[in-house]
Figure 1: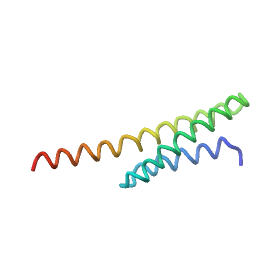
Figure 2 (figure 1 turned 120 degrees about the vertical axis):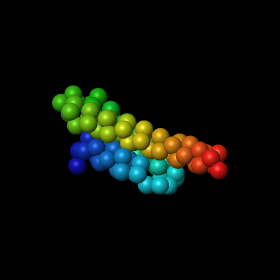
Figure 3 (figure 1 turned 45 degrees about the vertical axis):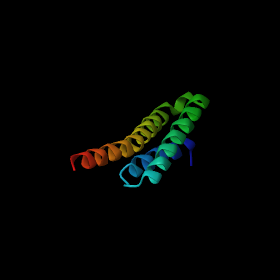
Amino acid sequence: MPREYIAIALGAVSMALSFVPSNIVQLVGVLLGVVAFGVARMVKREDYRRDLPCTVAQVMGVAGAVLCAVAPVLNLVGWAIIWAAG
């Protein structure tokens, strides 16, 4: 299986893990997103003809990493608001 498709799969898994309500799993999602971006960038530099799948993998990796990184922060902010309200 070509590496750009593996990177797309890693990005998709990273985005899916952003919906799991566990901070540890979401940290794993951030790591998967970063790995997906790195693999896609490496493959894109090796062969310019793989530009479109590599760009898709890069976008999915960044989106998954951002979603997984923002979710725990929003969770903590929500708990702080609930605690402050009473």
